[in-house]
Image (cartoon, rainbow, N blue to C red):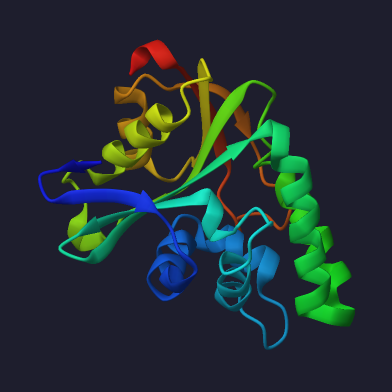
Length: 206
């Protein structure tokens, strides 16, 4: 998909260096809470996961926006029918990467899933929606969202989560027809990770 020099394409393993910082920027506090452990940073974990093929954070689930050959946006697409198997592969990655410290990471991950939950049945779930600061307000995030929805036409409901401390993203999603369905609170240490809103939109809004 191209529009005003913006091209959207499937991610590739070699995109890790450009894509992972964007993915991380979509929720740095949440990433760090779960995946920072010892000498392994959340971005270390994301790079290894992104380059894999079967886990939730794999390049195979991501699309990237490009402008003049530079990556300027990211989005991930999850579907309930294969999320369980991808999540199991992610758990396997945690144990391979963190070794004896993996249980601590896994427990924090389960805690986070209480707020940012797996996709509901029949919903197309969008996440990791991120654009570098210098490229914002050019409609890139909206293009990514519309592209994702058009790529999977079999879903009448589209869903996502957004930080309650990110009014700009909330404004964009509401403009596109998303409505807040539920307010979900972080169950870990108070103030460490922002609370989130779970939002849904009808395909007809697009």
